[in-house]
Length: 277
Length: 257
Image 1 (cartoon, helix red, strand yellow):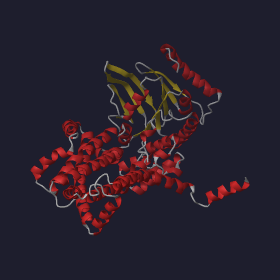
Image 2 (cartoon, helix red, strand yellow):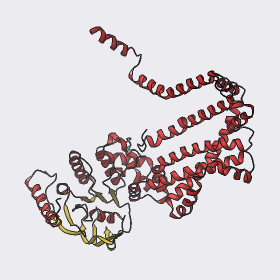
Image 3 (cartoon, rainbow over the protein chains, first blue to last red):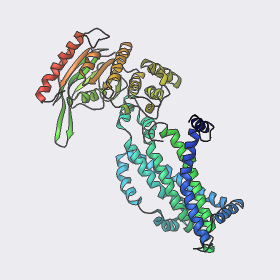
């Protein structure tokens, strides 16, 4: 009995799995487990030969293509072109979306003008506007960026507007009683008060920007871009290149979420207790 | 610090059923550095009256003069503390919250940090200057709110049931603390509450209001020496006296208070 207890405690203390590390590992495992299941199923189907290997490449083939295309610079070139369009379009959407949204929240007139327009345009799928933008602004990057900006502005407008409306009256009253003028009411109270919603809007806007950009790259006849890579690969049955492109999109999306949005949130609204971590 | 005159103030608000009179023809004067509690049942318009004095609402008739000047809106001669803990800005630390008014006044950073620290010391929160509000308990948040309302040195402090949402023990501590703060700063204080013991503990004078519409029913001076002992016979006598004023109205309404 004595021995058993000692053995157990030494095993615990020996640091095979001290509490913190163990829970960290568990959470990593929880996150990757579904991917392992899907990966295994994928391999089984790929190897079983139900589909031709050209159409359903194994993970090794995709990985091989991924590394070859990365090493010879083709994949990074596609990724960078896409990223530039994404960020330019998103920047447009962020500036105009937050601006218009806040204006709508602050001014009754702006709300009356913009709300009906935004409500009607927002639910229309971004792709529906694409042919129009291509005819108006020509094929290529410029139209893609404009379209991305236009379409991804809607969730940003909606959320910024809601955010301003959700600023607590008691904050405004307190600030008034402490002598805040209109300008500082805006910068010191409305803006930080609406920030949780604005950040949500930006995150939704970015997701929207991705969706429409990858699709529009397939149609806008741009020479480089992940959407174009995926679409172009269809002609030659290069499913491995398609999948490599999809993987890059996933990686960029994950990095933007973890390195940009979560960092900003942790530093602001989470630290302030306005949003749960 | 400065006297306040409330002259024939009437306040109406619009409801779907038409105009309702919240406060009717209320008049009383408050002396400089006087601590006045307004007590009354729910719906007597005591908070509404405080909002008029704060300048958040405009009276339908009558006026309010602070140091002789008619109140036309909010101003930095008054500091306001609300009941809701959420009044603090969650994106600012305790120090940032307290220095807000000074920042609006254009006081330099170094100076306003110094004053804000001093105010936080006054409410015994010097150890929590860098804490964000969500890390503070309800009582601590209300203390920050008091420090914040005092920091830019208004002559009048308006308090709307600031301790009503606290548990009984914390409330007792806060009342003692507020009495100390008042003794040190000598502000003119108008304090709205529905708690009779609280009013007797804090006030120089208690204005008793009755409801529907809100009018002044009694104006009672509490001349007990400070610090007051809530268990003394005199204290309980004053409490009973206030209760009678309220109880008369309460039995008329058929509701216990």
